[in-house]
Length: 105
Image 1: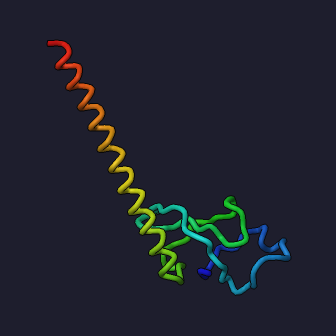
Image 2 (image 1 turned 135 degrees about the vertical axis):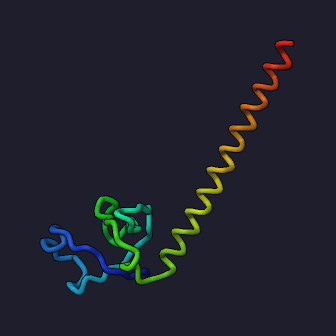
């Protein structure tokens, strides 16, 4: 299980099932990345919490490098898939244009 600091929410103070007050929580996975004021932040899905409780955390809060590595690997795979899909769409368009040009002569 991955562990990292987590911003405390008002609901945490009210819940009896929240992790210790040390501020270290188990992360399930990173789901997104953004740049905020020249600082990279990651959207963290917390173990035992719903998706709506996910929080944006700066990279320095990530204590387990495997968590970040897993996200970067999935991001690379997604990027490759998007590139392949764009290429396939372009090929389809070129075939359509070719068929149109050959059919109109």
